[in-house]
Image 1 (cartoon, rainbow, N blue to C red):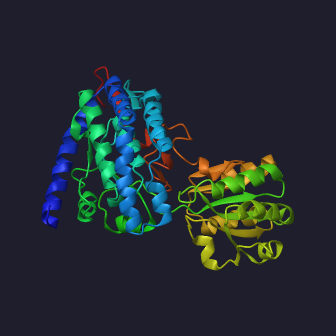
Image 2 (image 1 turned 30 degrees about the horizontal axis):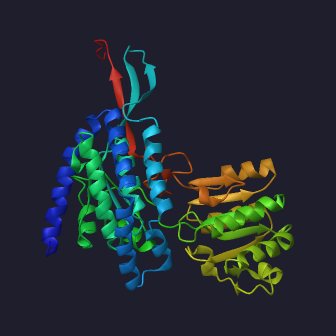
Image 3 (image 1 turned 90 degrees about the vertical axis):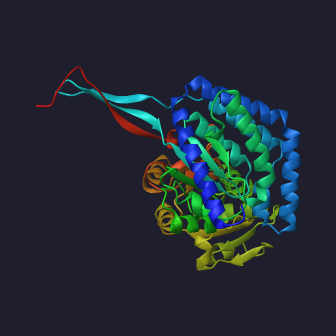
Length: 425
């Protein structure tokens, strides 16, 4: 494909094939779709060495190109990551099939029965950077939910994505489903993204997974609806009624478990009454990982002498670092903490550490984010951890889907009516 016109024509061909495949996927029964998922899982296990070799080629090229450390982390496909992909597929197999489920049945005075049936969205376009595991997660969730998918992974993962695409196609065909039910765009040309997000005649929804630059571009250019989140500015608030041991473990894990993920804590809020006790002990933990602390004046005074201490600026409160950097602010209590979250959060994930039940329940009710937690690390905001099998993305929008998007998020509802010959008077 040498020019934009060729790419556009190619993408429209993929769209036509996906639309035809979507009808077949919607017709397929649960056993057939599960069979495809099991075959894909088996193929990934069988060809794990080939996947690691393809990933090594991607990593070598990415390192030579100077890819950022956070993206290098997302690109790496370890043996554990391959095992997690396989486990995710098998967990999806075990999940109830939402397609065709009828709910909210009511008998109306006219005699008709009215309910709602859960149905696939149709064709889903997924655009993502680095993470080759998204190829499998997205394919698995789309297959189980009766959708067709067009996957456009980042150029940095092209070798691994091609290898995974072959295994997904093998599983689909082996189960008697159309190979075009999951298509991986086999070009690194950015024009493919522009075509995919402007094909509403073929694509029903776009799910972008990537950095702010990618999401901002899609928000400006897409004519297809999106399920998205722009960034993950996640907060942990340590209340003055917190259990210190829980607070230390959670605040350390939320920041240091992985730096390059959207559910990593970026700002730590600490109640004034507990700050002199908890902050020095946390600083000792963060020092073991060389985490830079960007502190407000109160926290700065408490942490004087910490080797990686910097005065926070206004910009720090609204920054997603994806790096060993943490903003810290001392607040009067829960109200100031929630005010800060309301002002700076990206509405992704927030957690309160407290033993005060009434305060914790206030936090749940009043904090307006897709995931709100009590005494747990923000790193749990993940489809696999929530029992969804895997996630196709995380949404901090309020319409259709919110939080980790699993099977139900890839379906919609239509009204169904059962009559017995009734006519309207």
